[in-house]
Length: 431
Image 1 (cartoon, rainbow, N blue to C red):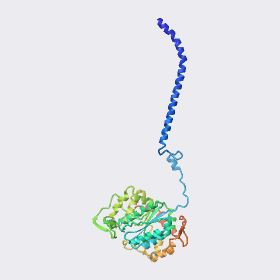
Image 2: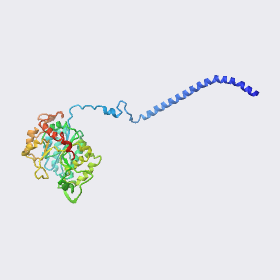
Image 3: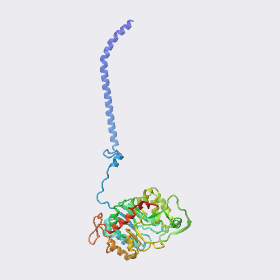
Image 4: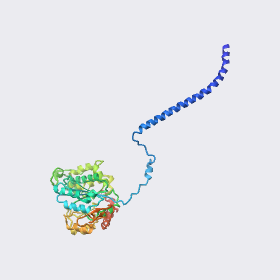
């Protein structure tokens, strides 16, 4: 009991002493905690700074806060208005064979414009001397050298008209054009026996009002007699392995019409958009390559390959214009090649409003009449246009975007009214 009394007598004093040192202990504890937290944060900041310094050595992919982040803001932004006139550019393939050197050269001059691109090709049947002469003319021509838009396929291809080597040659030219210069809108294939009926200024002016995705390609799925005589037979193109031109070889075996894709046929002459040409060359979904293998054994494959490709791809099927931009007359009954045009065909040819016609004899008087009355071309020079400068005329080049359309533009515009700006435009697509 005495012990308990003594102990209890001590407690009140002890509580008073605790009150004296408890407050300083709490304060000092808070100060220590603050210092610990601060030192930890400083270390963390220092560590983060060091890490940022390390990562700054690597390429940064952070989003620029000044750029629009959300899709809505990108959609609502207004694209800049293009400066100056928006004239299209054309890419031509002009091809020929043995004896076509001079008339290919004439057609090239009638078609020339500094805004366009040109590929010329004399096939392997042409003598080496002709091909070397064409190469020398292109390399030495002062306008071609200055502008740099005329190219020659120096490694000539053997081309069989009714075989796939003609398709292969066309794709070869497309690939070269895409490699040399992609600043063109339409690819147009012509032969040395073709000739323009309007100036390039007429075409560039009229086509400037058209959507650049249109493809002028005559086509139909109604094969008729062609199913039995072209689709089902099997042929071999000797141009694939011979150095001398021969007609196609026929096999005795027949084949069925394919069901994996729908066959179309039409004209071998066309004006294709650059987007479709890129698709045919790159073939990112493999359809162009598959069809190219199928048409390797198809009679007159140039009249079906591009038609079947474009009409079996929904992305391009609704861009087709069912016209080849040519005036072509056929004999009755039709033969393998069209009727050769003469002076008696002039009225119908011009009234067709087509920008091109075929086929013509070499240096026929009808070509002189076209030069004099419709192209304004004189003395074997270029077809004059707004780009022409110098003395004599068209011996030098000024601004290529200076376009001077003439009566040919009005005729061509009438044709486009019939085939593009009409209710029949959609009705005639891939039917």
